[in-house]
Length: 532
Image (tube, rainbow, N blue to C red):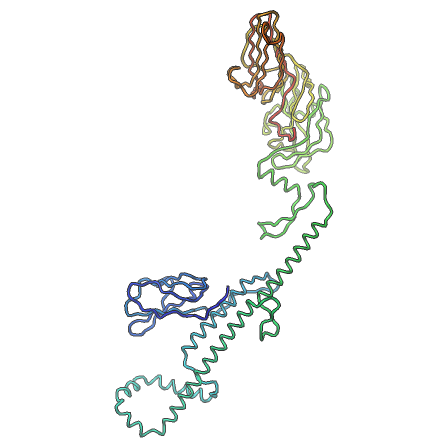
């Protein structure tokens, strides 16, 4: 901003008992920088009080604003608006602190406003010429003070003005009065010179604020403006920024980011100070902020009737990192969280984390939720950390399986064979119980002679019948005597409920027909393994 006008007063305006808004045409920075004076019909001035007698609009506007006086000044009164900036200096520029051109410019604006304010007051003052010596000035002041105490006498002289001819008798004393008049004229000239000097100071202040880059301020001894230093600072900043960009561009490329790598970040909690953050912390922030639990690897594999291996992997559960770099070999007894291994059970395999050093191990539990797992002392089992399933058969041995990602294959087990109509919910052989999975189902239908028909359907447990068109459904049919083949087979997935049940349906026209239902694995679709 700048102070481009020397106007520092508006008015006087005549009151009419109606008008409340009176315009000022000069810039102020704060409402209390405007002084409002009301002159009554007798000529007595009163300084109005901000917010009690009036409010101000347009603070900060180059063209000014208005003083709104409530109630409206009465008819016969006058309103005068003056610039009234406090004679204090509140701008604090610290050594080697941040440089803000706008702060410096505002301080200079306040200097100019005070100078204009002084100029306005000086223009209303009685001055004497600069050539008057101190003795003459002292005598003039003494004479004025002497007259100030004789107001009543001067009024008496006015009342007997008809006798002034008598004054001619004392004409010899009149030159002294003329000398005093000359002194007053000299003081007026001095005041005019002071106003000229004030204008020069205002011009100097403006030069300090706005002179172009590398243009010294006149009569300053080689000093430069705020604009000059702003441009110099900007050039230094650009040079530093370009240097940093050059370092980045010229740096050697890094193929892979590791947990210990560091990024620069502005810390909002510490005044935006620059700090470093680990790459692992960035991943943790994303996981916690999004509530995302995920992992890769940690694939269990059948190693024998009583043992499994778990492949290396890495994951984030509950916002904490879990990682192994080697294959983990465990027996059922070593994995079990409590009790002895039971027959014909579905065990849930979890990754657990050591509280002291963050290492990862594994535990097997009959609990379908992490909260129900019995952890070793000093370990935690966090939400989303289930990495697989292990099923035991009637002998308490592990059902052999082969797993890729979340896809689990087993030997093919016969679920049931129907020679008559059958339907309803049932649990297939050797699939998880207590968790919904997509079960691999095989159906064979066979007819023995012409005119026979056999239909087999397996669908989601939520289906009321095969006519509902369930989302996951496997069906096949064999019929003789038309365009169907004599034997039909089909394979596909159907989603079990949390009790391990599927809906099944078989329709046969005679005992010479049969529908065989078999299972050979499942897809663990709720496991949070990525790329599976």
